[in-house]
Image 1 (cartoon, rainbow, N blue to C red):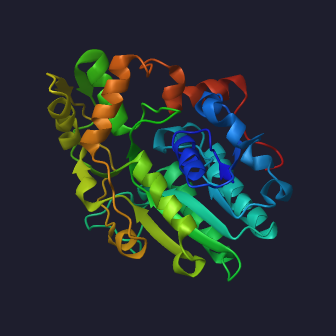
Image 2 (cartoon, rainbow, N blue to C red; image 1 turned 180 degrees about the horizontal axis):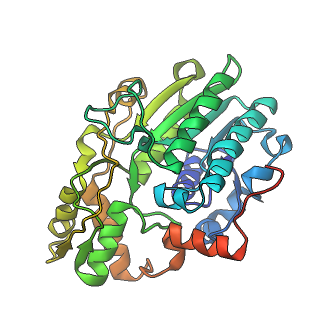
Length: 330
């Protein structure tokens, strides 16, 4: 079972699972529509449901649950911190508990490197954390609640993901590589609110998905009660350097515009553990991601102005319409 399987990462991951021969159930609210699953609907079981009202029966029969469903980044999480806590912490903790009760063998938890917040040192899985946003705090609270659920029959593994980039069947233009490429295509200008001095780790969406596939294939004892950072050491870069990579990769003249906002989030991350334990290796570069997105925009395969591709804007719309709200029974 993949919760959030119609989303940016989930829709790519589901196809990877199908290619591997897995039977897949997707549980998703479909707030962004189901276009991302259109060509594979006859190959999956689709359950339209909010994870906050999921039950044990939804999980029964699953070998593993991969819990992607969440409000998906720092700006979205700040729209309503209580809602973020409700979904990203409480609802996903409940999904883990339901999975255990239903006899699921593996629960894979897609968390975020954002929980490191601001650190001078290269962050490993045992480094002190410093979550600065509602999104990061909810992820860390969720990790703390689900890891103690693990036992010999129920394996729990946390994956702290880097900032993801690359083409997806449900695209996002609010992620840095994707956003900068979109801006270069539309305006030949790349603009950020701050000075770009902060570091971020990056990972291509297909590489990110392969980390989860590796965990499904791994022996439970090898990954149980473990935390893995997902990414590659080579893709820890400054945001300002990323801005320079866009015109270089595309051979375009692009203006770069900086602001005076100070981003307190600044972290570089070590990915040695996942490389050693799961033999994980990133096979895609940031330049690969830039080029594939630009070509999709240039060919018309990707609409640069689809409002669903800006997550925080779409969430604002859902909140204003009452579609995304706190549930009294969650």
